[in-house]
Image (cartoon, rainbow, N blue to C red; front, side, top):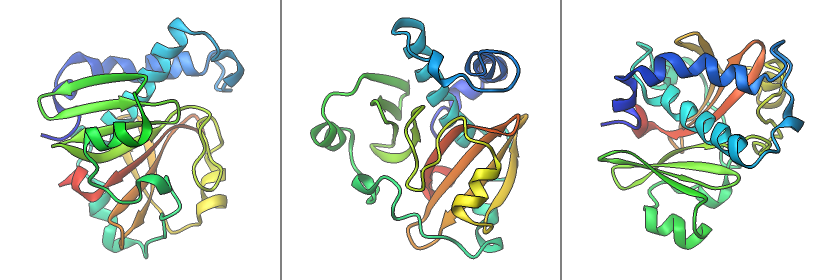
Length: 205
């Protein structure tokens, strides 16, 4: 079972997407107020929920297409600079903890999926190994993009060799590293990046 699949079958996925976007766009006019994300209690809950939502967008069967459907339609890019410490997929939960220390929180998504949250990344452990991760707010990709940046900054930073797919009401712009079998996706809403996801091909098989 892929990450978050049991949640996709509940009311969680249907209702939380717009709610989280409303919280993120705290002035309700589509301009992110990153400086307001400084509270401890509610703020941490929102950060965690957004990261979980990002993984659900990848793994839920809400779209008939996955990144693998676009593999032969793009030339491919080099994503080796993304999260260098975890360039090699397959680390176990224990290996992640030994390398990174105790996570801020550990979430049990289902019988086969564990989510480990750190200040910069939130890792999805699927079938015993790291299969994907999301970038937490204010943490940047290798080319300097973060949640809240405009959609136009994606192609400016990563080039035009991308695909676009729909997931519910959101648009996802993705880049594929064929050699590493890795995918980098940006979730877009109201012309802004609202989530950044890196996954291995196995997440979609």
